[in-house]
Length: 345
Image (cartoon, rainbow, N blue to C red; front, side, top):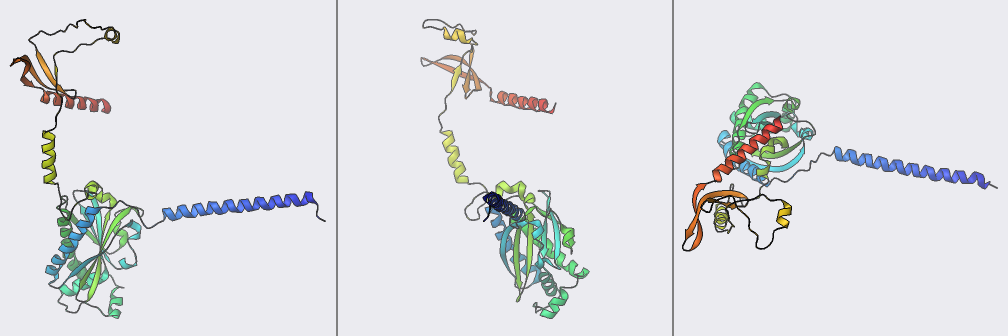
């Protein structure tokens, strides 16, 4: 027989071990979940409707510009528009690619244009008079192993200027910005314009020419788009940019017909709360001004005009003599300057 005094501690020990194992598994599950959340490649971002229109305009303008540049039939298609981490941009498809670093002058920040190796060889072949732009698989594999030559880099530089010029024109109806090409790199480590965990917008375009195709990936960090983020968040109808003239006209008409209340202030008295509580019917409040003095016209606590009190057609009237609106604006500016000076001190 088994002594109960010995069996009971064993059962308690087994229960404690099970609870400890369950607790450790929950801790590990939470830790793995947090690590997966931190290390996720997808970056949540607010949808930018106007940015999609900008890239759509860029896709159409690139087809025309590249057709004039290569004298060949060009088809440009935007494959995807995603938001991801900057460290995940340089994938296997970026191997032996060219990285064009450019700067948005008005936004004072940078972007990267990634040109895939097939796109570079396709454009170079077209510029040198090649007719068949599709490469043999063996030749394409050998070309992918070697770095780009100085001649190839020189021939591809005008293409970069063309793409950046079209990108600026696509943003132009929305905001004035110019993209200046700075340098061309063949190593992605020298094209690092942001930290690996920073979010970027990636727009990938597929450029097809004569049966061959290549990829151009436009990278814009969220920090670069921050100065125009409010504009990119706007909703719109079609591709109509800017303000709505019809709505502005309607709003102006309604504001002009709005009724407001004006107060004619002859004088003001400062009284204690006790004196106000003791006022009774029949008592008189003595004013400091004469009967022929001027009065102020006030609206919403702001003095607008000052005029002399008189009569017209048997009614009390005020003839406006001074405009106090400019004075009140100057006083407001002085108050702001004084408050700023006190904060600086």
